[in-house]
Image (cartoon, rainbow, N blue to C red):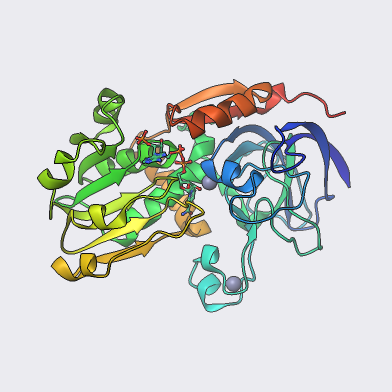
Amino acid sequence: MRTVNAYAAPSATEPLAPTTIERREPGPRDVLIEIAYAGICHSDIHTVRGQWGPQHYPLTVGHEIAGTVAEIGSEVTRYRVGDRVGVGCMVNSCRECDNCRAGEEQYCLNGNVGTYASLDRDGTITQGGYSTHVVVDEDFVLRLPESIPFERAAPLLCAGITTYSPLRHWGVGPGTRVAVVGLGGLGHMAVKIAHALGAEVTVLSQSLRKKDDGLAMGADHYYATSDPETFERLRNGFDLILNTVSAPLDLDTYLRMLALDATMVNVGAPPEPLPLHVFSLFGNRRSVAGSSIGGIRETQEMLDFCAEHGIAPETELIPASSINEAYERVLGSDVRYRFVIDIATLAPGQ
Ligand code: NAP
Ligand code: ZN
Ligand code: ZN
């Protein structure tokens, strides 16, 4: 085992603080990654605060990881020391079930191993990327294209793939009218990717405060959901609505904006159940769906797609000492548009 510096939540109610965690010695198929940057996903906050269920503490979160390969196991074939790599939301899966064989490891029927807060094969609880190093099986390591700035690449590993996957699955392309609800970490990536796919993109945000940003990212239209007129004006108007909001929404109101056979895909993950009136689905034969991150093959495809189209997240680089402050800003919808922790600033644990 190796002891490395990290930031961890001591409990669901205390701020994150510097500490140390243990990483396993790299096995034959493992890659030891020296982490340079870690994005702050809203899921980190839901998780450390116990909103999705009780956790084991102390807990280090972070599943948007960008770093450099520092060591490789004897059987590693795909990576070399010095390669720029990424790790997203999962670090293992059974590899044998139908979904794993289909390249959809995120839907592993035996449960994938999450990058943090998950039971690992060795019986330990996985610890995430707010740390200086991580050890990952090479099959769950991604290659970061050279053209994506290193300090902006990390958020692609969750926010990028979580929006790319449903946009591709539901066939978004030229002529598709896409609405993105919430212009945060996921939402801003959804706008950039949907625009690059050729769709007509509308942002539905709580206010018009970020309108100029949204249009600059590639949105064609921008509306405030605080204005009831918005929902009337856009009735029956979308082929796909991608809901990235971290809080509950009134689904019925949003569903009325779907055109014939259109779908509202939920990637936002509020802890509360969302009530739904089935009559909202009857009109226009509408569908409501969900989507979880993406498979490893598709994550690499997304990284290459972003490189090809010159897409990168809008990020604000922060020292580790500002993590708790950044959490409050995320909770206040005051993120432009992803906080990224500069891991070089990670103070030694006590
Ligand atoms: P984020 O940066 O906080 O963005 C969420 C956005 O939702 C905010 O910027 C805000 O946008 C809007 N919003 C927040 N509270 C709202 C409210 N009460 N009513 C209406 N809109 C509100 O969060 P994120 O990191 O993008 O994550 C978003 C959600 O996706 C989280 O629940 C996260 O856990 C989940 N997630 C799911 C997956 C998956 O695989 N399905 C993966 C990653 C994350 P405006 O200011 O523009 O209104
Ligand atoms: Zn995430
Ligand atoms: Zn599986």
